Length: 224
Image (tube, rainbow, N blue to C red; front, top):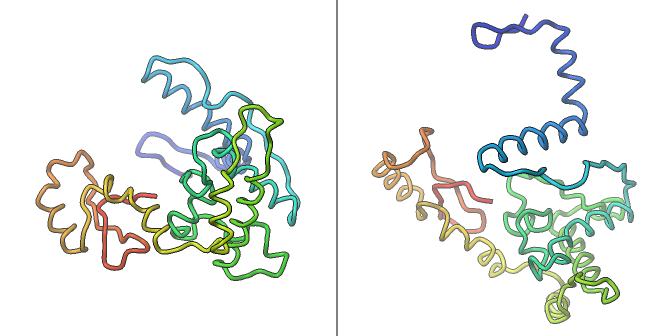
C-alpha cells in the first residue's frame, strides 16, 4: 500500500494502471496537451489547443531515414523564417548541441551517423551540421513562403569545414550576460546572492551554475 500525504492510498491495481498509462508516449503527450491548454487558457482567458493537429508518432529506421527526419525537424525554424541559421534556434536539437555543448548529455549524440562508422561526438556534430546546412540551402522556390539558409552563410561554413569556433560558442552564450541574474566568479555570485536573496521570489536556495565554455565564470540562473 502506498500513501500520498495522509489521506490517499493507492493499491497495487492503481499502480499497474498508472504504469500502463505513463508508459504510453501517446497518452503522455495527450495529458500534457490537455492539461497545459486548460491551465493556460484559464489563466489568460483564451481558447485553443497547445498545437493545432493531433499528436502523431512514427517509427523511424536508423541510417539515412533518421538523418533526413532529424534534419527536417531542425530546419523548421529556418523554413518558417524565424532564424537564418539552424544553430541560432535554441529550442531544436542542433541549437541545443551548439549553444550548450549538449549540457549534461541531455540529448543523444547519435544523429543517425554511428552506423556509418563515426563515434567521436565532435565529429558526429560536425558531419550532422554539414548535412543540415547543405540540405537547408537547397533552393525550394517552388514552395511559397518557405525560407532557406542564405548562400553566404553556407559558403562561410564550407570554408571553415563546418567547425564550431570559440567565438561561435561565445556569441551563443551571450544570453548569460542579460538573463543570468548575477554573473562572475563563483565566490562573487555566491556573495551577491546572499546579499540580495531576500528580493528573489523563489524560496529555493540558489547556487552558482558554471557556464560551459567560459573558464571560471558562473551564473546564478541555469540557462540553456
